Length: 382
Image (tube, rainbow, N blue to C red; front, side):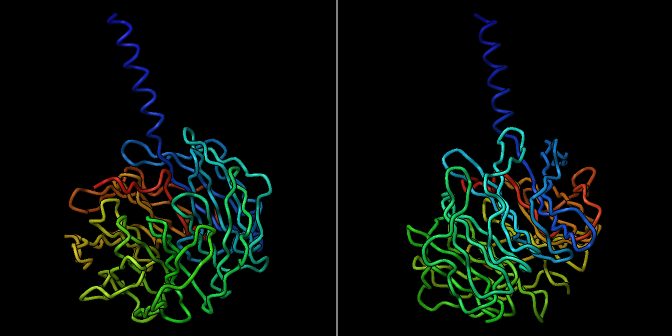
């Protein structure tokens, strides 16, 4: 009986280890125009101490062409649906979206039949992608256009544009995020210096909420929404270059600026991406041209303040940034060196280098703009 109990215990441990596998993916933005092979996605398994190890088969070819040296933090998205997970990577140069099925145990990426799927076609542009929390829809926009593409995601991961797509916004946009409650799409409408908010119908159709678009301090570049779907943060890509806009979101999707905003990222540099911790207590911002990552404490009203020691020095310029499922680690993309930087997050929000950071994506050229984690941040972590 003791032997049986021990065997069961070992099996439970093994099952738990498999269930807890976590991964990091980067869209490498490889451009054949620079004499390079087709665009790729690199895949890493996260070690217990946050270290990254590329999985077998990585980097994976997307079948499309990247954009080269662009800095865009949202060119990759993950949708989870009925126990399946799919990764979507934008191909800037060819104006397409590649789709992969994710193995939850190994992180391996298998091509979805029909991939890559057409968006705007060549020459494409700098894309932003966002999936709905239920995994039923993928939204995509390029800053060279004034439309948002809306795709239905099938059980195989294939994309089909819904009726009425692409949706005309009248703005060149960059930065998309679906609120965790699945009700709204938040859009950085750069050419309007504003943030758009759209309600999402059961069929994926978009309708502007009352008052949208909402004024921003400069041209929005990336957006994020907390797990409670009541706080929205936006980094700007125009003068003054170091600002973060903060808004409270009402139940109808309307935005109201948080008292004291905009907030500084703590440097004089433009930021390349932002990501909220799962518990909503911290906002992490990659400060592109100052070689650092900022960690800001989030007050109950949404106001931001620098964590002691922030910003934290990195070894290169960073673009997109992502948080691990439970918020223990933060990863950002070094777009000039094709590497991923890893940081350990302390309970107080301080950031320390992961052993061995940065980690190579396996690509020799510059232009790695985007990083994402799987499983995504857990809104059950408080």
